[in-house]
Length: 324
Ligand SMILES: Nc1ncnc2c1ncn2[C@@H]1O[C@H](COP(=O)(O)OP(=O)(O)O)[C@@H](O)[C@H]1O
Ligand SMILES: [Mg+2]
Image (tube, rainbow, N blue to C red; front, side):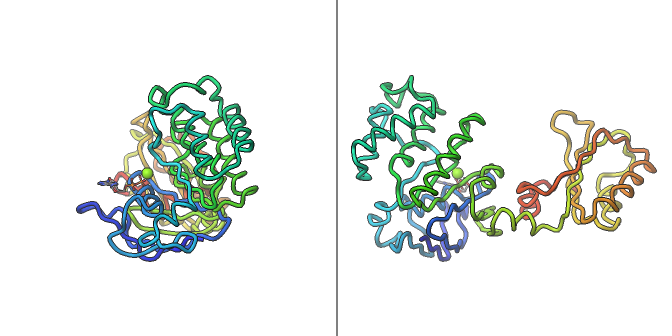
């Protein structure tokens, strides 16, 4: 449904999108996961024909984003990161207008609008002009624009940013429904690992303009060399070794794949260490032994299975701090 070939976009010296190639299948929910500044929104703006690439090409539903932008625009509907609303319209007018553009029959459209207003708790804002609304409410309307349009290809750029967890879940269900019932192909840009995990059939991890890895959330979690994750918080002032030394001594133990550490943001005397291990039973006693013999006081120890966070940190190394 979408074919991207070597797409590149520069803003002066910044390469926002750097030679990206990927294919998105018909009916797929495709997650674009990356930190702020990774290039997600720029890639979306290229596909939405809002901006032109410096090099490379892409086809959306068979149409070229460079030569056939109007054909592309007919197929897609985009919920932008920063809501693009007509300030003089109110919520109902905005959604009616958007639904008409996408030729949704009137009765169906009104039913859909009323349902969305109810579920997203927008009843109080029906008749208030968009310029008077809060950021969160504008964001909901921006997302609803796509949900009423029911396009062949729906693009959501951080659809739940700044919304509370209950609202996030409601919007996720609507995105899933759009995919399940309308068969829409969906691109979802997010910096929330959990959001990418619960919704996406496949996820591309993006960092500094480049795609680092593409796979299903399950395969991504299995792709990192860790059977398990041990989280240890210890008291910094009881540790006589340099943190670098702690790391290198622990890495000498068998079954340890990778170690990340950082200062606890709420307590500067506490170091949080994340250890990716291949055999948790065999290695845990040895790790405890190391802390004991160095008289380092452990405040907390937890074990978990790898999450999409761990995959992300593994491929972007973005948790490596303190000389790690
Ligand atoms: N219109 C623009 N002018 C200049 N720089 C931009 C513009 N849009 C994006 N950038 C830069 O391109 C990079 C990628 O940005 P963006 O695509 O917004 O990332 P993301 O959506 O992943 O947070 C960032 O370094 C950003 O500052
Ligand atoms: Mg963005």
